[in-house]
Amino acid sequence: MYNKITMVAALLLASTQLANASSGAAWDALYAKANGTCIGQSRMDTPEASAPVVFNDSIGKVAVLLRGTVGKSKSKVNLICLYDKKSGKAAIEEFKWLGN
Image (cartoon, rainbow, N blue to C red; front, side):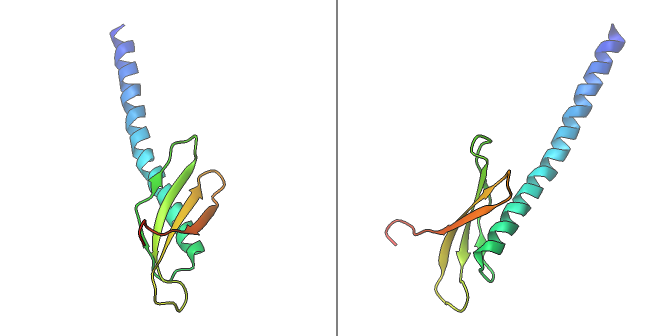
């Protein structure tokens, strides 16, 4: 009986550590894909990007806010990018803050 409990506890502990270790890498990979896709599609030279905002799985989207210049324009543009986790595609739209 003691051996079974020890074995189950060891398996649970090992699987928890593996899940946590791969989870961090998986999140980092998702953030890199979302940022790379959004920045690439923005056509901005060197945009500032927010930390990704991950929506729950029922939505399946990651949002990234971008700010920078497009082409030869000197005025700053604010873009919001919605990255779809399943398809890997992104949709980008310009946005303005309230009052601006």
